[in-house]
Image (cartoon, rainbow, N blue to C red):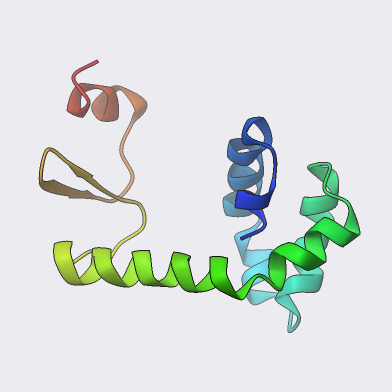
Length: 104
């Protein structure tokens, strides 16, 4: 929700930071929103926009419904998971392997 509330050019760097620090904010804190505030602020988000993002129930419900739809439709049970040309690819892969899947 926070990543989607950032400007597009900050989305990917923020998500990379989240994955790199996941053990700290996801498992090392009882208050995940408080733990996410630091990387969000480092990505240039002000507190008011952050509070609005984490309180956005419509966005949360949309994200959860998309994840549930993917799990049901494609039997996705790993992160990352990609559906390309109707086929599910799960797990980490190199940039070269991913590029080949995309036909690049």
